[in-house]
Image: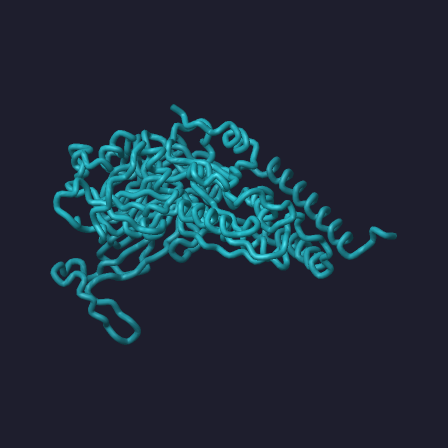
Length: 514
């Protein structure tokens, strides 16, 4: 029979195994009661006193030379996690007292200090680890408050102890309604707990074996045609640095799938890109094999450039961590860039006494043009510093420097106390030492485009010189961008215009709220 082939047999076996697995999961959900569970594990227990033994030698660290009662100091890292099947709320703790949740006991040791950390996905936990909320320690005990934990959330306790050596008993006790508090196996720092049990792993291995075998058969005799958007030749992509991560990924995919296509990237900013395309096109007998990406529309004088709306791009303000500002109003930003606010303590009575340093992009930057158009509603002041640290002339109203790339701006803002700058969203990546701020209380988010009042955003255009031939590499790559670039664009902070939501916002001219 024609259907009896190796790949079909494996596909049927995979389907049957999948059905059996689904039935087993349904049975488990109906028969096995869901439990609440808090697990804990010791991720580190190490000596940090005056003398630490290493093999046969004693290495004198000198950490507590002036405090001899700390000679036997140890440092313990304890991870507490909700590894059950349900979230745990405040009312699920059954300990005595309104605040008491769990108790940590370090037998034979005395607690000298505690630091609490939590994952970035669990910022809401911070307010629970205060003396007012019930966090305290006495002797060998730490009293933990009633901390609500969603599934898979965790926090860590870094505890300084004295009075005994490494390896003493450590135990967490407490009551959970319809649940348990139990110790998990020891793990390395920041090691994630296993996602699957033994049965799940066996099923996963079986399914993976079937799928990999089937995929291997298909790949070996792969005769599928290349994408319809493939074309041969060499294409140059220039322009926006905000869109560079997107085109870098798409370049690799396109060249891999489309034999005979070569894509070169020449990314130096939106303005530089559209002007280069205009020069190349004016001096050629036909439309050059070039695409210029631009944050916002081209200059009005470049009438030979034809634009295609590709995505809506998001940008954000970034501030050095020395400044605890999480939100800035449009009015405050404009006053800062006009030189009316020159010190962070002018924004709030408890603000840090730090001069404001403006770290900006150069004149070729589309990110800068969008900032001027959508946020400042004016041009930025002239550059007054070459090193971003000191003014080149004393009577400049504000210290402002210019850099020629996003990575340089982010690095400089993270390095300089009091610095502020701007950048494309890029999936939310900001280096250590800096953080993003909201504008008038609104954060940049692809999910809220269309309803949010967030102002720092713009349509991303792909420009060609005239209309490229339908069978050209230029046209093929632009179609490929629409058909295969959605996930890549979203990941890097852009809403594709080719999606239903993007079509509505881009096609309507996308007027900003207000």
